[in-house]
Length: 114
Length: 110
Image (cartoon, rainbow over all chains, first blue to last red; front, side):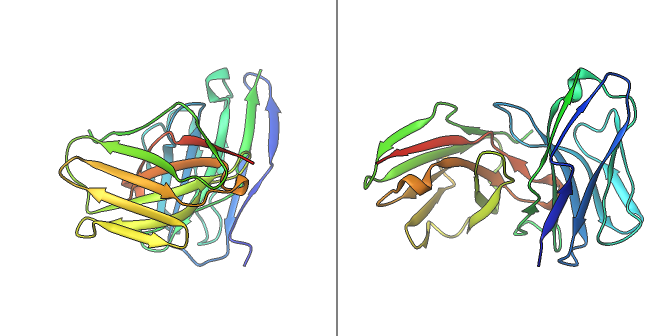
């Protein structure tokens, strides 16, 4: 099992450019999440999905979009990059989304917007 | 809304000593509490979950306590090693409602 994989590991964007962060999990988990982590701050939820075809906004969704066409993949799209989107992005998955559920994280993508 | 507070100052200890990290939360008492480990440049990795009716949970050199009266969890690493150096995150789990603390950085010196 590879677990949760993310690509790319690093990326530098110019203001106004677009990109897609890829996330794939091979654990057949229903729930998938996108977080951003800024220095000194806890993980902030951007979007989440409870299954293929079902997505919803988290705490900080502005400037991002997601889709979930398969159980395995949950890409995150940045349409018009802004310096405020400079952050480390983590994708995670879990089996049930319940209160005792464990989240499995990918290695992260470090994004810089200049 | 529910918040988690973890000491933002790094904890420096000598190898072989016990490291104790604190997690305080506000508002309602959660049914569960988790601890994750995060190494530099990597995603968090789950370590332990403790339920509200469990006062203490152990896993090898790790021990977690959960005091719902104080609204606090303590995370202990006994006989600490340099390999234990990492950031430790406290979390109140709930799927898309999971709240993560900012973490406390631990440095264990040889």
